[in-house]
Image (cartoon, rainbow, N blue to C red):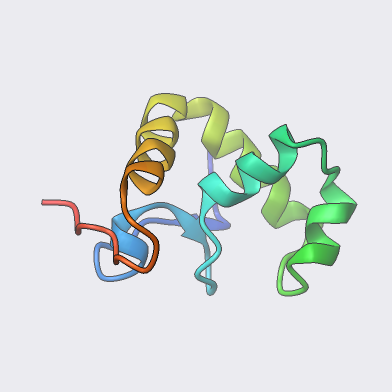
Length: 88
């Protein structure tokens, strides 16, 4: 699949996948969706996003679920305000 709206840059957000041109992580979008937010609600919450960005993020998340779950778990384990550890 082509995830044209998703990028992974080791210098941004600890290398976690984000929506292109933003710092909005795929894991954040997945969390919103799991909490019951619809695509339009997520777009309203994050005005820089388009519906296509959210759909690409969700497709990426479900196709790379282990990676995204690991990223979310690492966030939960890190004290608030501590930056993510960059990927090797």
